[in-house]
Length: 602
Image (cartoon, rainbow, N blue to C red):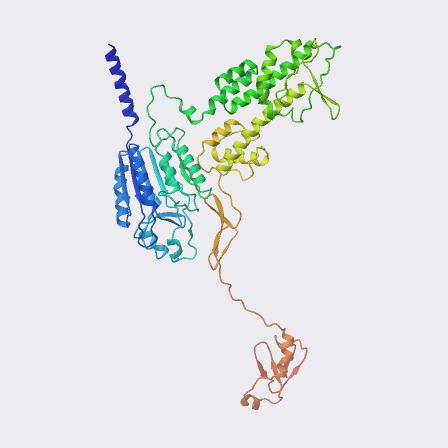
């Protein structure tokens, strides 16, 4: 019977393992190093080899490795992989080599490309959209990893057929159109990646370290990759991921089956959530037993520190209450000289130092044998040298320099400790939220822990674009948990007039020659000015005065016909006065342009 039961358990485990690895996973790995019309890149081939080996060791069903592909070979590889992805649950494409961005579209460059003109990119290279189209049939997850953000030599030699066409450094940001699709860049949009000085680039080194860890969510894996690359490059290169996934963990390699009951996925995603819930429950009870129970369950961590601060506050309050209750009004305890203490003895920063001493003094001594111990400043209980100890727990400290008496723990001290603990906790949460809001593009101010108006506006921006409804007036742990789940930018980038969004920063708009920047922040072609007729700068009266100075040439035929020798001019022409007529100045019959002179004939 025992043998049969063991057989059933073994069969169940085998079936569970089979179902966990039932997903079909395929990958295409391309490394282009030997470019015919550009300098040789040594690392892409090495990086592609390392990534292919990592995916094979992770148990991928099919890993296709291609190196130094020309245009025809690259086209064939994408077409064949599209057929493989149609029958797969997870499809991954890794590309290392040269890439370029033209007019907001990213292109992967094969080894035989020349790219003499910007229009050659459509015939000699492959857009990133073409790669996304090849992996689109995959059922569960589509992942494209582009290690092609290097400084591209083709951009310097390429001739532009249109002056307004933009060719940027690095690659442009991309937003996948299909769900459960991620596009990972070795460097943020608009920036270039470094090859490094070793066999593999910093990005590929971090990629093979984290990408195939069993059970590790892809968003966390790329977060670890980002941290390693920033550290290796001195913050000069920051990888970035575009696209979104659902709320559940999505691992490229499933977690190894464990003999024990698997933990709750939500607890794995956020280990602090359980501690936070228990801490809030202990605060609602607001007694020492509840806090001690919490510390027994969670002895370390951020919320454990808050619980110790609260426990010290309650202990100090109980000690003060016992002192006031047991001390008669007419009796006053003798003042015992103490060494001078620093002015920081009431600060909450040292509250944890005296938690254990305060609890021991409160529980292990009788009211008449107690001496006050203040945990915040590190004061220790000092016994009086007299044979009979005072029944009170208050002692006094005398500053020999100023002859001022400082009393022991009081309600003001306890309140100050409580306020300091609450302030420290809220300030830490506020600063954490500010750091996360800055990461997702919703905050541009400093992360100083001050939950001011700028931070509240940033939280309102997050609510608007993330579809949440958190209270903007307070910094809550729930809001912090929600913001941490966002893998990329949430709030849109807003640029001033004359600038345009370029990745996660604003770049200046440069219009082509013959164009100008209009009020809509767009380049508009400048139109030529229409010619308009212009009048003479002098008026008609001046013209009539200058006309007699240079009389017009009159033919001999006209001169023979006239008898008076006078000439009259209007706005059109000049002619001789007809026979039998004479000129009259300031005449009401004057023609337009004649200067007030009229020809009078009888």
